Amino acid sequence: MTILAYVLVGLVAALHLYFLVLEMFLWTSPTGRGVFGTEAAFAEESKALAANQGLYNGFLVAGLVWGLASDQADVTVFFLACVVVAGVYGAATVNKRILFVQAVPGLLALAAVLIAD
Image (cartoon, rainbow, N blue to C red; front, top):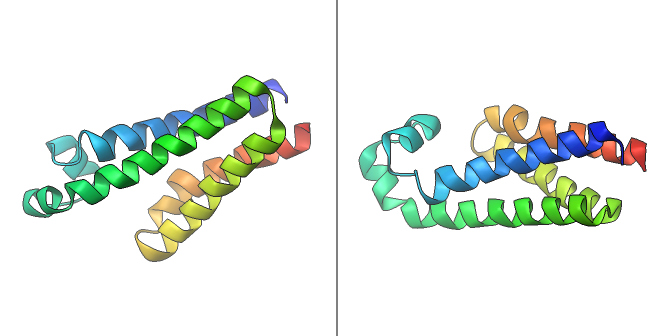
């Protein structure tokens, strides 16, 4: 992979690590509620679901780091495809902003990896 591909994949992994922290540890905090636009009562009621969602983001981080560390483009492509699909689905079902926050960075990283391979 090229340096650009490594950097973009690393940025996508960092984004998903940030999502993990927000969803698993900061969901009910003012920061987490501000990012997701939730009320305190809803955040408290849904914190187990958010933590589960954060865990899935952690699996994406682990897969992307695995792909980078092993220099296996096929592993990286698989996990970036998961990021893009999750981003498109989230944009269609939750908030259009997810398309730009998750799917577009994943798609750019995926393109860089595929071009470099």
